[in-house]
Image (cartoon, rainbow, N blue to C red):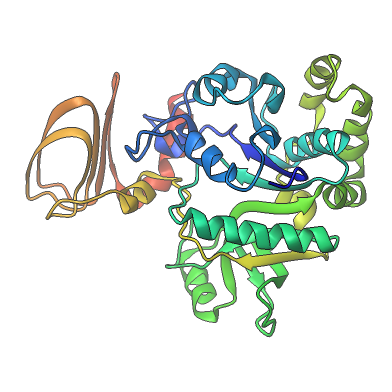
Length: 351
């Protein structure tokens, strides 16, 4: 196993579209959403450790989740957990982690990967990741793994690549925001758009050079504490300075500005498990296309629903189609699947 390979495992999100199961106190990455016996972060760590030394996998999360990470990943040492005192989107935390990695190993090649995605064909994932590592080791490239779209999804960002580029790894023309349905259909029909899965690969040197060029204020801000990184002085520096960093995604901060960005169309199956509907797609169904998790059900004229409870609670339904029915503690959610993107707004209103 190559000692220069590193991973930044992003595990700081709240997953509010999976409310009421995913909460601020216990987000979805720490749940066994599919009933496999492993939580999403455990599954992701196991997958990455097939190609990356376990001690080189860093977990980037909010400080509130430190004890949960240690409990769910007992093989991880405290120094492998990078703690954010506040949430500041992906650009500051990736810069912070990249500086720590570079100080530890200037020759590091890293993958940045969300902790809550579902990938079944792990052999293909490792093959794609190796291809990307090789590409970024040879030249100063910023890379992403794009997902071949299967339908006109309005919940993902898209990556446009050059139609005339016949190479396996393609030059990125531009990143596109989450489109409306008509635009998403055009993307699919043109056949040179991929879903942006938020999986990135680059060398520590290349990504830090990009930060220095395109985000000089943020770069200088974190470089002020470079000497403190990986020492006992790091926590104090981060506590005082991290909240002052700009709240911006790495896509906006770096990738949309750089000219050396490439994409590999992934050959593994992928689901970001971002909503109840995406979970429904992965679960087994009954004859009426209902997906049932941890519940006992009696159903009449009920089709295409996802039903989840605690403790095998008996759920009786008549006349519901395409609904999310979730019972958790003192919350009961009954919500149309076609409005699932609105759950995030509902949660913020309830606060």
